[in-house]
Amino acid sequence: MDFDHPSPDPLHEFGRWFEQASQTNLPNPNAMTLALVDPDGRPSARIVLLKGINEHGAVFFTNRAGRKGVAIEANPRAALLFHWDMLDRQVRIEGEVTALPDAESDAYFATRPRASQIGAWASRQSEPVASRVELDAAVTEVEARFADQDVPRPPYWGGYRVSLESIEFWQGHRHRLHDRVVYTRDANGKWSVQRLFP
Ligand SMILES: Cc1cc2nc3c(=O)[nH]c(=O)nc-3n(C[C@H](O)[C@H](O)[C@H](O)COP(=O)(O)O)c2cc1C
Image 1 (cartoon, rainbow, N blue to C red):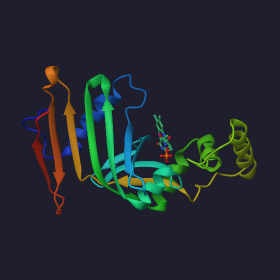
Image 2: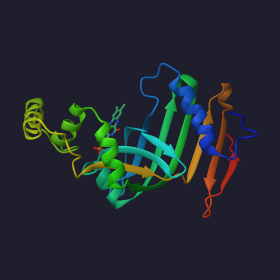
Image 3: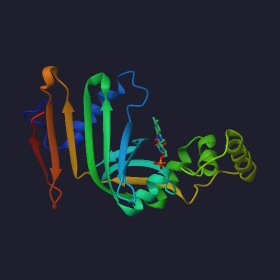
């Protein structure tokens, strides 16, 4: 990336970096930290997998009844962070969170392996579970419930989209003289780009 002459379109730059991260031996180049604010105002973070990105936002899927879903309900804003250590790069995205339409969540759920679909029903994500035995018993129960039929998407499971209000690209260099540019979008959707001191 040419930090003195960045592309006017941050998705163009993101696409190239993501492609390069995918060509490394990183097991999950699409893993990103998702930071939210819980209803009590405290920050919380966890890793989720990016499953799509375009001008409308960055998409991930989860159990909406879990802790992150509760946080999004109360504070529908998120920060996403990719760290591609092998490339000495990070990308920060910030924006507003909206639930994906049911049809899009259904379509993605249908592509999941059956065992993952069963797992989505068996897991009451973020709630206490007594033991592995209790978890296995929940899986067995769900397998019996959906024997010989397709597994439907649980009503509490689906995608979220984080709109792209800002995207920052960071490339590490020696002596802390890193390259940074941040793109921000105005109300009309037009991007402006600014280089930052490291
Ligand atoms: C590499 C990696 C990928 C993950 N991907 C997802 C994901 O796409 N969706 C998800 O709900 N949880 C994913 N998790 C688990 C989350 O980090 C987290 O433990 C879980 O979603 C519960 O978060 P919550 O209690 O804040 O709701 C992933 C964890 C790791 C380490």
